[in-house]
Structure formats: C-alpha cells, structure tokens
Length: 466
Image (cartoon, rainbow, N blue to C red):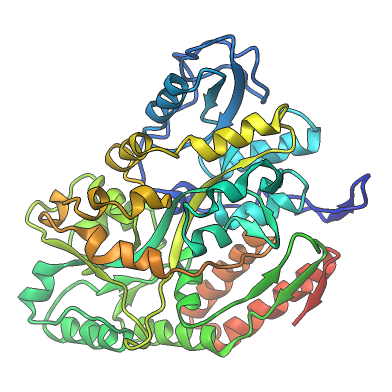
C-alpha cells in the first residue's frame, strides 16, 4: 500500500485502496448475478466515466446522462425505471466489477485524473478510504439534507463524516440468526437468545451426538467479526474527514478481548468450525447440515436460498441475533452499500439527483427486494406493511423482516470505520488466524492488532490518538 502524499491543495491522500476486499459483494448485498457490464447497450456520448458504453437502454438521448458503476442484482430494471420516469436526466450504467474489482478501477481513475463514473456504488466501510483521497463529492450542498429523514440514524451515520455527506444509503445488513429448526428439535436443544445460551446449545448439540457444529467462526470474517466485537461495545476508530490526518485508535479494548476469548473457547472445545467464509466448501456446509446456525446479515437469506444442492428436508427459521445482555440488546450490521458522487462528475448536481432518487420510489424498491433480495434502508419502504408482512417460502412462510431484521435495523446506531479499513481488515484476519492456530491468545491478538494499526497509521503520516 502506498503512503500518504500531499495534493496540490495541501490535503493528504491515502493511496492504495486496492487491498483485498474478501467477497465484497456479499457484504454489500445478497448474492446474485452481477453481470459482465457488456452487451445490449448503446453509446452514451453525454456520459462521463471510463467506459462510455451503457449496459442499459437510454430512453431520451437528448437528456443529461449520468454514468453509474454498480453491481446490484437486478439493477438494470431499476435503471430502466429511473430512465422511464426522468425526462431531463438519464442513467448510463456499467457493471465495472464487484467490490474490490470496481474499487481497483476507481483507484486507477483517481490517480489518472480521469475515467471515473459520475456516480459509484461503494460499501459503507470504504467510503472514508476514498473521501480522504478527495475522490468523493460532499453531497450536503446538493440537497442531501432533503432526504436525510428517509433513512435511519445508523444508516445515515455510516455515510457521513462530521458535517459532510459522502453517499446516499441504499441497502444494509442488520444481523440475525438463521438456524436449522429441525436440527435443534432433533436434539432437544432450545434456540438460544443470548451468547451464554449459544455456548450451552453448542455443547448440548455435541453431547447429543450431532456430527456437525453449531456454526462457523471464519477467521476471514472481516466485517462479520468486526460487527461481533461492536455488539459488545467496541469502538476502535474515531475519524472526521474534516481533519483527514487525525485518527483515533482504541482497538485495544476489553470488549473486543472478551468477545474474541468467547469464540476462542468455542474453537478450542471443538464447538465451532473455523472454515474460511464463502468458499465452495463453506457454501456446501451451510446447506448440508454441517452447521446448525448461520450468523447472517439481512442479505443472508437471499444468499442462503440461492445456494445449489440445498437439503430439501431442512427446516430453516430466523431469529434475532443472540445478545450479551438480553435486558439491554445491541443491534449490529454487516455490510451495506450506498451511492457516492465522484469528484470527476461533470455535473455534480445531476449526479446527486441520481444518487438520491434512483432507489427513492416504492417501485424501484420492490424490484430490489423481490428480484435482488436487498434489504432497504429507505424508510418509506422499510417501514411499510408490504415489507413487514412479506412471507419467505424458504423459511416456511415466516415473516423474517417483521420477526428479526426490522428491529435489528431500527436499533443499529452506526459505526465508524478507519480511513485505511482494508488494511485493518487484513491485519485482523491474519492475527485471528494466528490465534485459532494456537499461536497467541485472544487478549494478545487484540493488543497486537492495536499496535500494528497505530504503527501503520503513524507511518502513513496520521496523527494518532489512543
């Protein structure tokens, strides 16, 4: 990863966003066909952005065209709806790759000073890594306040830094627990509501002869493991883009140590697996009865239901994520994406309109929900009877939004990521892997993570407060 350099305006730029983002699309939304960004389009002469070929049809070629990079499932239908209902602005959409593939292309365009789209889909966790590079437009002067009330407090916090608004939220990942009701019933084990009960249930399943494990604790869990730490009160970073060279790092916190020690204990007792997430082997185990529980975000049901070779006799249900304190529940989030306007946008006002309005109708969101399995952050649909009352055949007709994910979304207070989040994830993954290999305990793992991130930030030119 490259270091920090000063731009001509005296701002510091953290280069090298291309550090690996494991299964980035899965953290942003449910799995699905991301397309290849080719075919079926027409030249978009009025659109800026590296690839001026639209995947979609432009309805009004004389209108202002805004180029968009995004990998949402079923997105072309949403684009067509926008273009059908907007005479003065048209979207020219390209799938520039999923997650890190897109981010790498964006980074190349930033360094070249050209080739970026007007609007780009970003996961919330990488927004600070791009805003520090002056690659994103502050949307506050372009009417962001007009739509702030359409989003929950936590969703809005995830896309802002101080007074600046760097994206408009789209989908999120409030967390719950997907579990095999048939397995729990077979072994007479109660479905856990707290993490203490979860550990007890894990032991009871093993003692009862269950050949699998209660769940997987993936060392490459990145955003998942971060969310599990955050549920116990972990706030590892403070950062405000208004002071881009200053970062607070308090990774070395007892809450994270306690959570990691909890999982280390389950690993050492053989009660959970440590398989890498989202591999072929992991996907097989999700659906063949090797895991009794899938700790998941709200996009998880769509991902789970889309896996091939699922056990037709499995009985899946959804429940709230276990809590450390049942009397004082804390809700957490895994993933989520948003639309940002890039600093290369030729018409920021038109680009901001696209970012605000493309998922700003019930019609667009019904496509996103029913065709793309997205979890909406737009409150008019999030809080609608339509969404609450949806029945999911994969879960035996259970209304999983009403039962689990709506409460989780409403209770999520937001999270602050670092301006070098991919590096932080890489270090976290490496150290947790070392822990499960028996090379260090949980406390030392967190302490070493803190030390490595402080050292890295200082080497990159940040002023660090601990």
